[in-house]
Length: 204
Image 1 (tube, rainbow, N blue to C red):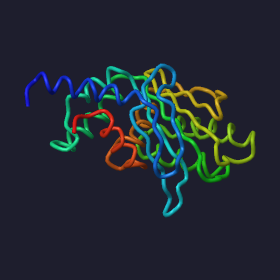
Image 2 (tube, rainbow, N blue to C red):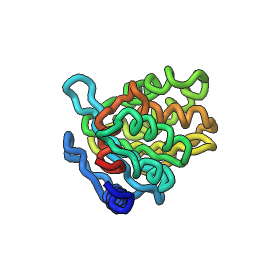
Image 3 (cartoon, rainbow, N blue to C red):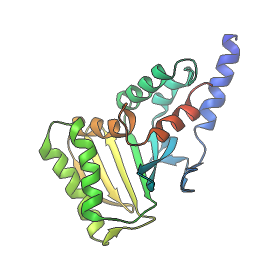
Image 4 (cartoon, helix red, strand yellow):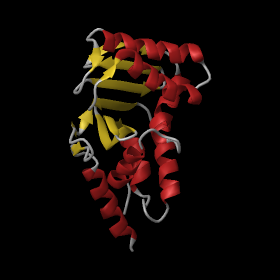
């Protein structure tokens, strides 16, 4: 395959990655952009047979360009590794969670904190994150179907919003990167999200 053809395919891949997407597992829709960032992929978070929430990842054009020349089939291991490294090397990256199943405030906050904790060695910062999530949900009672959580991960730390209302900021680059790993590393909570990102941002 010539370099010219590869460039054309890469350009088409970038264009596709800017479109709105629907999580096939839940039917939940995601808009093509959040805070100027492009939607890379969507996936479902399951606990057993329960589809708890859908998640969309939004990242920078710089991260997308790194992925555009990689094949998701010829070298999936490299593509997944590059996906993880590129979104952390080219912040900001945002994760938008949309609830599909009702979960209590404490349970939701603990579930996310418990996913971050093994990836970050500062328990105090994880507790700050947990408190922001808990406070945002408890104000409305529970994380009912349709509730949204947005986690904006940047070099300065992580911003937390619930239903579009900002709950606060945890100043920690390490926590921000650990949160990315919850969805991007090999023990991620949604392999469907990673696969979707490769489908939409990489060559066949």
